[in-house]
Amino acid sequence: MTSVQNHIDQNIDIFKKQLFEFLRIPSISTDPDRNADVLKAASFLKNQLDAIGMDDVQLYETKGHPIVYAEKCPHKDRRPTVLIYGHYDVQPPDPIELWETSPFEPTVRNGRVYARGASDDKGQSFTHIKSIESFLKTGTELPVNVKYLLEGEEEIGSPNLIPFIQEHKAMLECDMVLISDTAMFGEDQPSITYGLRGLAYMEVEVKGPNRDLHSGVYGGAVENPANVMATIIAKLKNEDGVIQIDGFYDDVKPLTKADREAYERLPFDEESYKKELDIKKVHGEAGYSTLERASARPTLDVNGLWSGYQGKGAKTVLPAKAGAKISMRLVPDQHPGTIAEKFATHVKKIAPDTVTVEVTSHHGGHPVVVDFDFYGIKAAARAFGNIYEKEVLFSREGGSIPIVADFKKVLGVNSILMGFGLTKDALHSPNESFSLRDFHRGIKTSAEFLRILPDYA
Ligand code: BES
Ligand code: ZN
Image 1: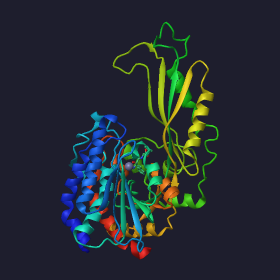
Image 2: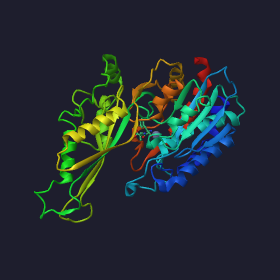
Image 3: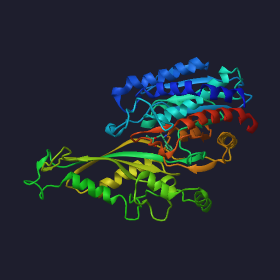
Image 4: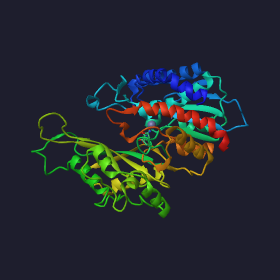
């Protein structure tokens, strides 16, 4: 074993304690009341990067949350430069009453740490800091150049990182981006993600009468915005799960025979999938498998819905308004802006003229598919294989990391999606967790990747 790997094994308990410190910071990017905590998480990272001996450690202010940057480039133009990207912001922990232990008090049960951000993305992104630290602390020269970029706005669509990478192209120049913010195919089954879906996130408001009404006095004579909202939503998909928005599929690249065969080869167990979620049946677009539906086909889902009386007991009311948050996951070559427009036009077209309908667009992101012939991906697969002692699979995933498309477009580089998470980590759900064994193996895989990468360049 190399002295770097040895150092990781010797220090893993300290690394875990530091991760727990990071997890205690409630860096919820979408909640303005948490701005100070988001900044605290950025400062925590800056201190970490300073302490391990990175160069040029900076906290860049943005219009929103800060961006943390650091680098160590001992080989300048002679060896590959890896830009490691991660995010230190987290999703809100709600509904908080469903957490078995407090979301910001990391708790270990059965070898897993439970906390918001444990897997997405604090635990995963921290692996790379600890791997670089293990080179620097053992006096082992870093085999490649490393740049580190961490943002605090991934969970709200990276609005400030996109202009930042345009403005700092020279600083961020690299040969590839390395990201650990996805899941492995299964437990002890490493995989490299080669596709992510994009996103168009919309909000719809239906307005009826100028006040909430007595449902007996007015019901039947005045249009009910809640009923209208239900009808609109019901019309957005047909019984085969096909989205009915005009032109929605225009730019969807159909799956090729080779794509579908690759999906079929993956060892997916539908029974355990259903069991893990306690569902009776899977559901989705006719003619596609569960894996295809969850990663290669576009979707439309209600993410939030409100109207009328929500309290205990019964109140007879005809609500004045109804609202819904609706997200669409996108696949190549769909464009989030175009889809948002098509959605708005369609919803307005199918709404009755008895109400007013407003449609607004929240954040979005472009879908990506990475060419896995790239040498960085080959090195990543070998590194994973060396540490997990298992052959690596290649799969596409349904989630989104908006900046990945911009790394390609603006910096001209491929991203290597080397996730250490699992679907059972419960990202964005109550009781999010991360396997501490995968945290440990993740650090080792990161170090192994950096060690062998020059041989592939
Ligand atoms: N880490 C996730 C994305 C992810 C999860 C990719 C699992 C693949 C597998 C990321 O932090 C995330 O949740 N992104 C948001 C982006 C959105 C808010 C623009 C998402 O996908 O909802
Ligand atoms: Zn994430």
